[in-house]
Structures are given as structure tokens and as C-alpha cells.
Image (cartoon, rainbow, N blue to C red; front, side, top):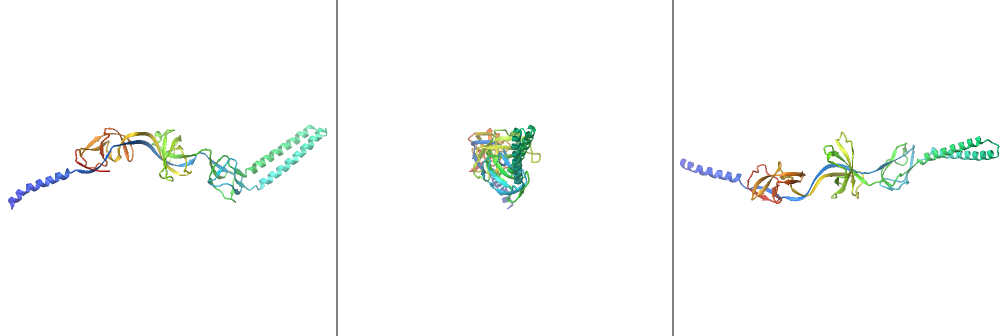
Length: 333
């Protein structure tokens, strides 16, 4: 039995080594994908919201009680249209009193003029009566202007974005009752990180998406870049002129990609295939590591500038134990 064991041992070892070698060098199952061509875009990401280009606050110039609301949020209004009214109160009494004083001053002026013409009074009396009439007329205009402040009117064509008041409420002088969007279409305002603001220029193409409009892509151009950043958020405000605003409302959130570089016919591979400026390709059923020059790198695709044939098939996710010349068994991505 001892001699048989020593005779069988080399055979067992040889079989074991053969099995181990075969296992170690077995074809490795990998997923390969052909190199493709398409657009490669280098862009700066930013988030923000839709806002009106011009917002006009509608505020009361005097203190008074709100007695009528003639426009509400979402209404389209015209220039000069009355939006709200305040209680006239004492201001109407002031106008009536001023009108009465003006009437008296006018009558006094007419009588004085007749008496001066008949040489019963000196010219200086007519000048004094004219001065009193002018003062009375100025008082009437001032009182009427104050009364007119009780009617809040639209300074331009636009849309009421917000109303902050109810009938019966007392408004103080300067208190904003409504906010009016006018004079220009909506725009997008986004915050760009200070690390990326140097790559942003006026006129730059911007591609936007809004959660409120799923499946739709909006386009625009950079119109303004604020010269001073926010030290707290470490960002700069960038305003974007939109090509179209259909379906958008003020206050909607948007995500924007400010395009820095775009190449339409770039050589692309999955970004997961790139490992330390190289990719693994499958040639004649075996693995070959190929050094490449990388261009624009995205989350899903990476541009290859040189070093890779256009007909190559790359390993989509190279295994950690992949070695040069290893046999591969390819599956579809």
C-alpha cells in the first residue's frame, strides 16, 4: 500500500496542478461594448429658478384702509389699470376744502380785477389776489394728488405675481400690496460654484431641465454674470435668457448645464471602461491594455482623443484581476 501511495501521489499532484492552472487561466467572463461616436459635451452644472426679468412692486404712498381689490394673482393687467383702492377718508374732505378755498380765491380775484379796472383799487391788490388764487390752485392739486394715491394703478402692462393684502386691511405708506412682472419674458437665474465661474462667459449656450416639465429640454444663453460672489454659498449668480418660456412659471426650479465645449463626432467609450488613462480591449479573444488620451469625461461616456481604434471593443467594467493576455469570454452589455 505504501508503494502504491507514492506512485499515485505525483499523478494526484499533476492533476491538481493542471486543474489549478486551468482554473486560473480560464476565460474570464466580461462585458464588452464597441466604441461609438457621438457628441461630447463639457459643461458647468448649476441649479436655480425661473424668475421675471422685471418685477415692479405696487405699494401705497399713503396710509389707508383697503376697500377694493380689482386684480389678483395671475391676472394680466394693462398700463394705467386700477388694481386696488383705499378708503378716501379725510383726504376727500381735504380735496373738498381746497376746492372751496379755490372757488373763494377765484371770486375774490375777479372782483379785485374789476375794481382795479375802475381805478378803485391799486394794481398791488390784484397781484395779491392772483397770488392767493395760485396758492389755492396748488393746494387743490396737492390734495387731489394725495387722493389719487388711494387708487393703485399698474405702471406698465404685465402680470400680477403676488398679492399681500386683504380688503379691510390697513396699509401703511410704502407697504407693498402686489408684485407685477412686466416688460420682458421670464429668465432663469442659477448659482455657479466659484470654482467653475471662470469657465462661464456671456453668450454661452445653456441646456436646462425643469422638474415641472418632465421630458422637455430648454435652451438659452448666458446674459449676465454678477461681478461679486456670495461669500457664504461661495457661488456667483448667472442669469440666462431663454429661447422659449412656454409652460414655465416664475418660481419653478431648473437644472442648467452651461456648455463650455462641444464636439459632435467624438470617439466615445463607457466612463467605467477608463482606468488610469487606459482601457482594456478584446483582441482575438484575449485582453490587451491600451493607453489612451482622454478628452471630455462625463458620468456615462468619456471622449477618447487618441490611442484607440474606431472599431475596438472595450471591456465595459474591467475586473480587478484582469491581466495582459488573459482569455476573455464576452457577453453583451
